[in-house]
Image (cartoon, rainbow, N blue to C red; front, side):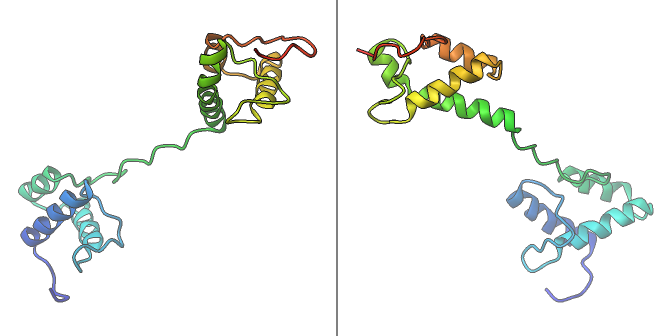
Length: 163
């Protein structure tokens, strides 16, 4: 198509195609779809809506495919996990890595100097976990998971190695 103006029916049909592909009918102003400035067309549609230049049928047709005439035009992006949430997820993932050790030994009191066969630093990580526990820096879910794996929070100086 050339640079000519796109009438409402043709524009709404193209916008419906855009919506089927992208899952929404609220493109950014600079979005182009099939060599057509769909974003500019929707922007002008919103301007016409605010100026009361659209008929009720046109408004209904646009809303039926998902055009939002009032902000926010798109759903907000979900917030990324906070640092604390990432730390909890990381601790839980590391505890999952110790499930094999737990299955063999019945606890996760990994020797600090030797670690496990597949994770040599596991003992040092358990020592840091205990320190965080003593300072009240662990989330309840991490504490519960570690306790379900029979962690000894206060093993004492130089506890005997695992058998």
